[in-house]
Image (cartoon, rainbow, N blue to C red; front, side):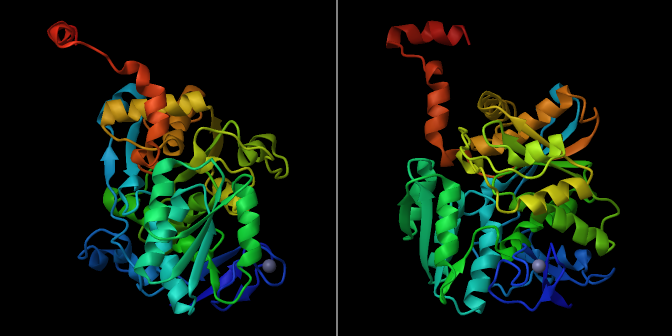
Length: 398
Ligand SMILES: [Zn+2]
């Protein structure tokens, strides 16, 4: 199957090489396949276990590094379905090896780094990307340097980056500042940038779309997910589009992205029909989407427009409420940024944007244990302090 890199702005085609912006116009690049019906046999692929490499024929890398990523559970949320009057599924990406969807991008991205002969990997990260890159680099025997915003990273994620042996550099400033620094150092020979601007990352992440179709055996009406650096929404959209082009799927879903109130440049652009203006001081409890200048904003807004989707923002309060709701109604514990997809769903139902009866898949991007401090802070008033003699009475009141 013919494949190449293509600029999303000027359309120039490039042979595969370790670059992430168009040398001609600086636009974002994506990997293109010439697909036609019959190029991929899903029936045959289904003989292999459900994980990312089941779709190896549609992934532009050899499997050099893997921790068995993908194959995450798609839960039907029967308790919430009744309450919200929609058919809701949650695709729990927190079940990946390092606890977030980033592992899908890293198995492909780090495999590609090895293919390109790179010795050092790097990224800027709010936490999950660094945890994942550190793990895959360790397994691939590559050195890894990660840049994190000082004081604004969830503890579980920092612990992962450290234990996997990455060089962790804490930068004064926010994620956007850390990303600027990474761009500067990745121009060197041996250092390979693995933020989501790297188009190979998105090639791994598109398998979320493949898996949703594969498991449901049809396309859902809508997919809702948190938007941080904005790569994932276009990646999943690409997955659905490829299955459509291959003649496997007959439809495509509406892609719906959720940002936080304190950091919503793409929502502003979508709602005000204005040009893109980055948010200078992003602020939210959901650290994974605390990004004011999402590098893949253009790919994200294209995915929303092309799919007839929507962009919405939610407050920290709505996020924490949704996190509790999903845990207590369905037994699914996700980090705050992930819960924004549920918070967004509730808001869009209230606003009448989502119709009753729609079939919806919410992507929860990271495991709740990544950020235990936020949960303990929001739930600590629920702890009951009691003496032994009080216990019997307390149980009666349950
Ligand atoms: Zn270009």
